[in-house]
Image (cartoon, rainbow, N blue to C red):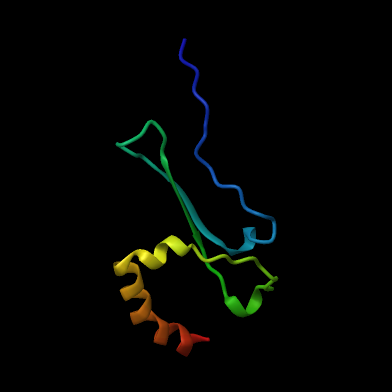
Length: 81
């Protein structure tokens, strides 16, 4: 007897459910679980922002590729702010 259970799903808050555009379950050849995709359409001006906690991962600063990429992207982030 083979027992199967569905483990492939997303949990989202009630506040986000109206922003879900599409949710699909796709076959995955690399695993015994299906891939689950969730498309969400968010308008930043409509969503309330709450204070959050952010902590830098210091080990990234020793990665020269990361530092180079971040140095290149900083002007873009400053423009967007």
